Image (cartoon, rainbow, N blue to C red; front, side):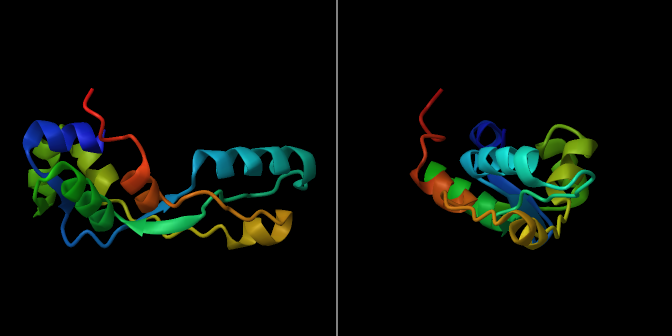
Length: 129
């Protein structure tokens, strides 16, 4: 969605200073965790499938670089228009300071696949639709 929005608007945007953190995990690491949770987690466990925390600004800057567009900061009001709704502007400005350390300790889970920014750099997300 972020790539499509950047293509459509001509900018890759973040809200405010862009320091809000997004918890991220590669889908293969999430799949491994899901299996471990089913097989080994005590009933009622609270698990966080978080391999890393990435700032939204760094995501926007990576998208901008890959598309050859500017990365820009938007106010919350500007973001509501850019991201098509006030709700999506709040989602993109949300700070999610979540850690997977407890999950790693409990289940011995160690994410090993590429992080979000590396996956954006090397993946095929930017192949024209």
